[in-house]
Amino acid sequence: MDIQGRDLSETVWTRLDRKAGAVIELTIRQLRHKISTWVVLALGTMLMILLLAFYIDSVREGFESIDNDGDSVDQDRDGYPLGQERKYGTSDWNGEEYPGSGTYIYEGEIDWNDENREISGNKTWEGISLLDASWIDFDYKGGQWDYIIDWDDVTDCPDTRGELFVDWIPDYATACELEDGTYATNGKFNAEGNITVPRDYYLTYGYVTGIFDVPKDPKEMYIDEDDIDWDGSAGSQGADDDGDCHRTDWFTQMDGSDEYLWWEEPHRPDANGNGIQCDVIWVINSQ
Image 1: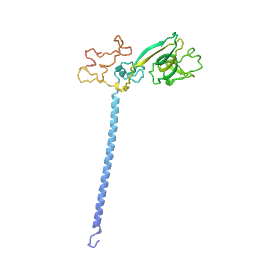
Image 2: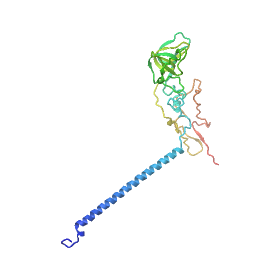
Image 3: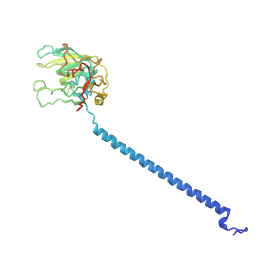
Image 4: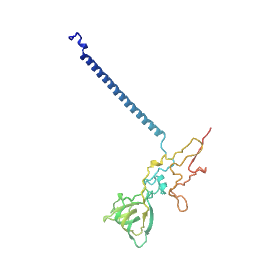
């Protein structure tokens, strides 16, 4: 007891100790409660994200993207989808012809029986020849069916097959290099230099004009790009959302007789015959 007769447990200091302990205990409890709240919130968020991922995956499986008009293909493997080739009036069966590729202008040829077998210049050459080049366009490439030489695949000419241009010639759309640095060619290429055409073979030459750069569209642009736009009623429905039916300001793909070129499907904007271009007829069965 103190001098006033009070028990030590009732002194000011003991009361302060109890209050301090209570404050510490309350703080710890609040901190524990706050941490548990954040843990529950984080787990709940992760669970919602996981459920959302499963939902998106199920939606994608249930609504698979379909190229219903076939214009996302790239038959000639030149990197331009059919839909983009149609816009520019180029063929999707010719890798040398693509949007911005320009127009080939024929200048002349050396036929199999011409007396003059040599020519020089910077041109587009096509045929069998002996090339003494000062410059070669190594970037000039085509598709899988083109006659264009891929200079990345050029090898040394073999010396075990006999006399060149007599016993053998390079394979189709290839070239090989001779010991003196000249090339034996059998294909199409851009180059500058001196050209010699062997007897009994021919070579044509010209140049390409009107070249301009056209970025390649991703094929995804031509998949699910044109919905039906159904308003819930029967009859004429739909709109040409992507313009590939009306084809306004498109380059034509016709020959001089107003006939579609052999590689292009006929364009019939009113294929259903109802007098309205670029629509579909929606039929609702009431039974």
